[in-house]
Image 1 (cartoon, rainbow, N blue to C red):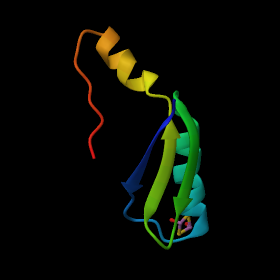
Image 2 (image 1 turned 120 degrees about the vertical axis):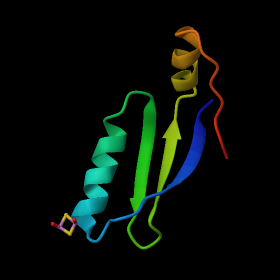
Image 3 (image 1 turned 135 degrees about the vertical axis):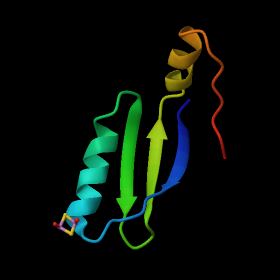
Length: 66
Ligand code: 9UX
């Protein structure tokens, strides 16, 4: 299934900032859903754990922190 994380995002000052962060996240392979809160300075990201598999396929160990 999907994994979800919350990420602290610093430096956003307007709704266009949050839109830019959302666009960057949504455009990332493996990201299913991204929602950014300006007031909470955080991003909620739902992603495919195959992201970690891609690292392991490259010969390294990957573990989600938090
Ligand atoms: Mo508007 Mo947000 O220039 O940085 S996009 S404040």
